[in-house]
Length: 380
Image (tube, rainbow, N blue to C red; front, side, top):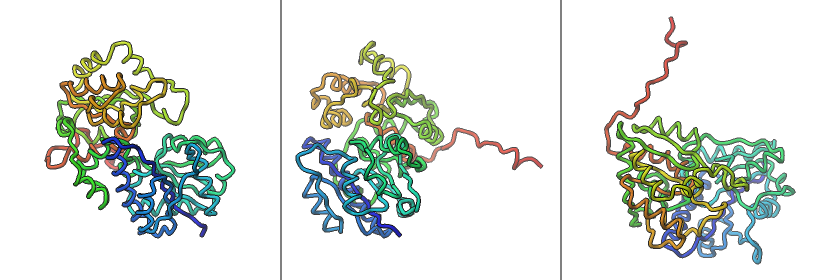
């Protein structure tokens, strides 16, 4: 059996309210992940982070802290190669902090098993924008030209000839703590390990739209719009699990993995008609909406600082300096329909959680769609 290790990357976000909320949520989720890794027998767990306080805390749990290279801008690919080389790894599990926290022991065991394969290969939670992965024959990565961020790694390894695979899409594989909205949904479903549940119980998380939107999801007469980076597989699952009708405006998929920023048609429409009219039309067309605001409001691929994005997700326009994001957030608050704002995770792992949360304490017919008729089974 080759030498394997799990590597967790954790980056501090900032001092703003939303940033601290997400950062501390990721830390709690990471502790749960560490315990799961240890329970399945992963002996070498490495934390790469400039946060010395958190690193020392995890050291007490048996994790090995590694500091990023000082004096240089952080580079994901170079960091992973440095760890593989220094640890002489044959297989590697990688997690961005905030991802993997909902994985079961069986799912983590499967990742470990994949990393121990005798032939090289890579297994991603999301091939086009990965949050965590397992790689077998990891030493083959040391001489490769890897990307500065983790999102496009699947595309890069595929181009390098690595056999690449993706995990089935479900809440555990797709959920990532990326924004405050993700924490709101996690609390609504009461999912997660001991640490993240204890953390969420202590937070005063409120949002005026969550409960109203959940009511729309179980309403047969309601119509919901999904806007942003929606995967068709996730949308299909979500639509089968909720009672309302759904429509989707899909834009921006792979925006962090590709550099051309093409396909931002909806953002151009928004520029043309104006934000106020956009929300007026949206309220006339739907009873609720879930919006991944990043591709919609990115200007040439540029986004404001996390503190502003998170303030928008929490519907606090008074904390936002960026004119476009502040106006968009004010119109969200003023809308007649409940709207959730967030990032990519909201429309990936978040949809799985919403499909669970909406039925909590409700005894309503879940399925509006008839079962498929199998002629082979029914024929005499």
